[in-house]
Amino acid sequence: MKKFNLVDDCFISHNVEPEFLIEIIELDEPGNYASGNLMFEDVFDEVFIKGRHFVFKIEDSFLPFIDPDKMFLYRSICRRAGKWYKARVIAGFVKLNDKQERVSIMEDEDFKLQPSDKEGCWIVAHKSSGFIIEFHEGYFNETQQVINLSDFKIDSSNMMAVARILRETAEWLVRNNNELLI
Image (tube, rainbow, N blue to C red; front, side, top):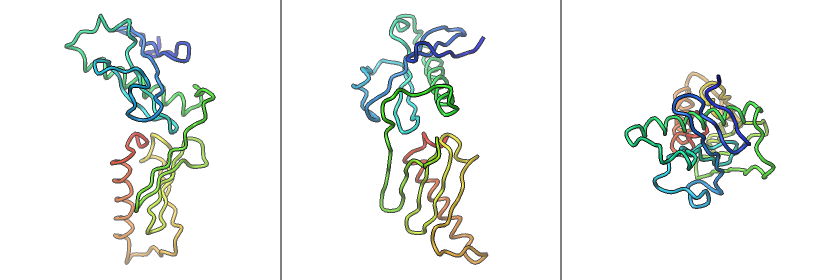
């Protein structure tokens, strides 16, 4: 028996003890919980998938049966359900609805993040150096590819500068878009 199954494209069933349904809610924008009718007492987890913001919430009919001493367990199950769903979307087993995918571009004075032309990939640019890192969503460490678009010559005399640029870029991603990395 599989731990999770998709039900009617809007629920995930958790098939092992405790058994319950997890509702899949897409929010209009990050942090806009009112658009998903979420309440403070709801048990849920959040995941960004292909530039869209999803919440995975325990279905309301199960709420009366929640044991307050096991809240960590329920949140953990919602988190795993969100990761399971994200993996299914990225692998192409689940198609997102026809709603136009949001193009998420985040930019400040030093960095710019935007979707890549490759399916499920992102590009982050370190503006002043011309270094770009392309990576597959959810697999930053495993898939990052560094591209040097500037005239910056890499040799033994400036390897520490290159390492600093790449470290700063990764730190910026962690601070601002860590949901894209793992």
